[in-house]
Length: 280
Image (tube, rainbow, N blue to C red; front, top):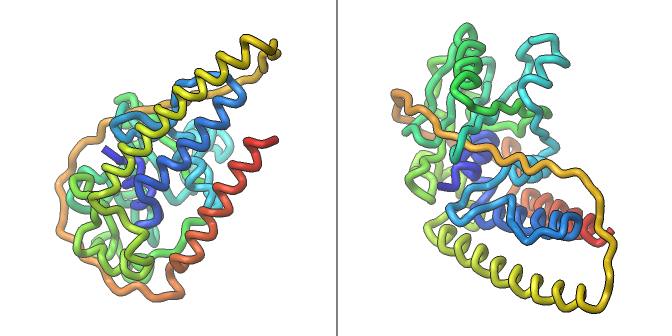
């Protein structure tokens, strides 16, 4: 599955997040929720590799981006679509719509390549998604620059727009130059699925130990129950398959994308903040 990973990387137009990165974010969110709610149930990742909206939202914080429900965004912007991207979800699927140089692209990872959405059709398409049960989020904030911005002059130029294939863990050959520019360790290979399963199994074992420890403590100590509110916004999706075009990728210059080291530092800082929040 791993469509949340594909939606994120398609949004950012680079192989920034692996399945293991997202699983680690989910694990830390589970720990925070467990410490507050006292529940052992994971609400942020399942055995199929489906990640919650909270995981996607936390991952986007690395780039100072945030998700806002489409209805809330329209209410604050008097119905004007002044944003640059949407992330859509229904049942078990996530996918991205992104604007590049004024042109909207459907970057659904179920497709073999990007498809164009005209400005006049965009609002109708979003309304259709809502009618079909999709939840649509607006991505707020400044998206990182991408190579396609240097080549997309009109809405017929789709050669340099990246779309991650959901049927393969490693990006397609046209995306290799982005992968190599970031570092060979930053993209997803076939071992990530096994690593994700191992991480989930490890978490389940740790959860079992936590339950045993909690039971022993409760036999000796009376702990006050914590009162709090939570939103377990698990949203799911299935995307329609459009006609597709063959795409390729151009060279990436160092001043276009953040370096792999910069991305890693941002991830580490983000995970440290989660750890500090858990200790408070």
